[in-house]
Image (cartoon, rainbow, N blue to C red):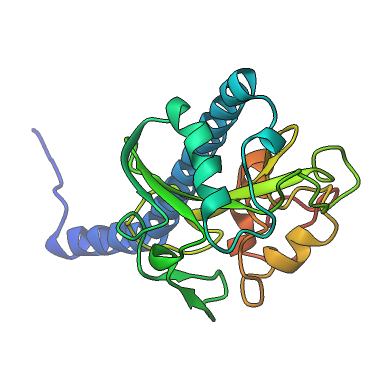
Length: 242
């Protein structure tokens, strides 16, 4: 004689409720982790793209102090020359030069206290790439003598490249999808490394006070965006939230 017992309606409702609660707690964390991992991968790709373009440009044209850059560029002439030297080695869908049309009209700092319009900045040369990212180039020193550290590269900064890794898509926020690299006489350097005194601490570590421009090196080398979740990380110290 078979005596099979089925779930009662009450038991099914309880199980479904528990599964729903578990999903509610875990899915947002899972989606956050996926998004942050995508950011890490995409930012590393941008770094590789810029580094390869830089290497090829140097082989063809010499180091950036020969590229017609400008000191503290305010007109955009140096920025355009920087872009034009690297452009043959980048896969570009749109070149806006110093004009508008290649950038969002609102770019927010990590602490959400300032919103900037990079779209109309005339001292930045702006492009859109085939992978959906956008870049803005700025010239800081014609002879690559801008100094932000004791290393060879950080003592010979020529300018900078700002990268929004997902283009016009939100959040358009420094340190979240918008990152900065230095163009130096000796290569492309992610901003905010351990060799830049206080840059990560001042411009990334605490999302309530930092602008977010010091986060690039952290994401690339430590492979996380944990500064979004805790404020006690440090180069040479704690590199992940508990």
